[in-house]
View: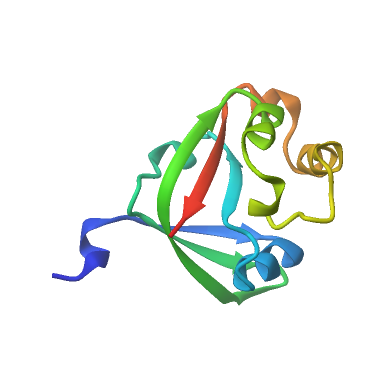
Length: 117
């Protein structure tokens, strides 16, 4: 039996910089809002990350762990920043970047740290 048959496969897009960090093995955790789609993620599922500038470029990961937090600040304070591929930024810079993607209103749904195998 194929391992693909016992799991779900999700498609998500990543900006080019984040995609490159993932591909190089620098990014070990992806951060997302706990919206309806992300609420369905389970350990063992796969995510196919598509590079935003070239959607045909795909990187497949298997979910190892999912941890929920109430805020991005709590999430980023919990982990070593290097696991996000950001050894060149501090927490405030990372938070400023994430709030360009998600609004504080969206954060009220909760946020997820998705760890890869």
